[in-house]
Image (cartoon, rainbow, N blue to C red; front, side, top):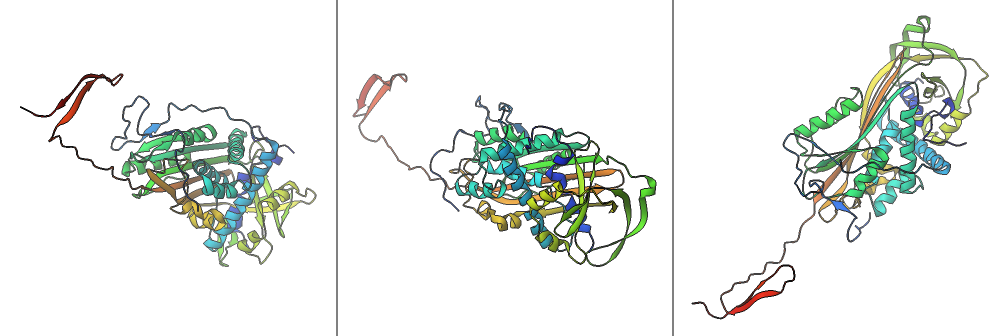
Amino acid sequence: MKYDFTKKRGLKRVSILMAFMILCLAGCGKGSSKKEEGSTGSGINLSYQENGDVLTAKQGQSVKLGNDLKKNDIPASTEKEEEAFKKATANLAFKLMKALSAKEGGKNIMISPDSIITALAMTQNGAKGATLEEMLGILGAGMTLEEYNKALSGYNNMLSSLSGVKFVAANSIWIRNTPQLQINKDFIQTNIDYYDANVFLADFDDKTVNDINTWVNDNTQGMIEKLFDTIDDDHMMYLINALSFEAQWAEQYDEYQVAEDCTFTNSEGEEQKVTMLCETMKGLIKLNGGLGFSKSYEGEQYSFVALLPPEGMSVDEYLAGITGEDFLAAWSDKDFDPDLITRLPEFKYDYDTSLKDVLKELGMAGAFEKDADFSGMCDPNLMNLWIGDVIHKTHIELDRNGTKAAAVTAVIMCGEAMAMEEPEKIYITLDRPFVYAIVDNTTGLPVFLGSVNSIE
């Protein structure tokens, strides 16, 4: 079956992103390499415009860069590339979810796989050698960098084009205003072509913190107000993805389907009062011994999916036996024979975490080491870069009307200026006879040529 990410989908081709909202309900549910030598390409110092004028970020101001770089057309991904991307993304999403679920110990969790992989994809466009191989192995699972960029770009465009919902995504790159951070122009161009990234030069001071937080707030429709409180001295670059989702149910709940004062038993065995949304529907999902259902949003292009683990099995234990490909298979193999009597609680929460340890455990440890190779991002002879952290924040609200959700992922690039060799100092003192010349600068030929043997 062809999954052309550049075209709209029907219900059966619902996006992977919304599939992972199952985990919100499940979370509440019951029961090293050396640098390459030489040039890294057409490096440019983004502190300077092409006309040679210095473009510095005035105190308290972030300057938008890259206006001279126009977005180029990119080729569409093939069916084979799209299928490889789909499997790799689904499997990575469940690996991340399993690791975070085990780490958090019964807390509510929500991730946006799309936000995470988009921020990491922008970052890996600046990686080289073993660092690129490591990152691409986790994200693309055998795909080339170009194949992955094409597939992810097409997937993101498809998500934004689906009807009936409000899906907004944005990407930005924030660069510290320092002359030793000379950015590779190809790195910026690639992220403009595939991810429409906006690029900013800033002083990385308190005003920059405010600028970044304002950008995040604007691009999550106010659902995530803040990303950072401060900026550390070794933070050299931020690569940020933000997205928001807002949709009404295709079939709204009537008043008689809303049951107040119901009981929900949490992971600690404590009873909590909730409002339940009740409905009879078709489409049973069977996965790893658990049972589930899906409910469509307006436009029939996105769905909410819920999975209930078997009685007596924790969410951690349930997730341990599921891969992304298992989920995709269960989604496509629904049983429409039985009637499903569903009860879905209204809920709302925020979640934030560092993905650093999880990504290192999954095999991306080298990118967080100081000997990581990000020479495709900047001149490694002037600035050494590595990933300091990957911060992920999400928000969700589900009620009788529909769902609102948002996510932001920031890859923090840390760096240290490379030690520069002091040029050799040579002293020339004309305190004895010497030769001199007066030359024309075009040819270098002496117009006058003489010597001084004595000075009267």
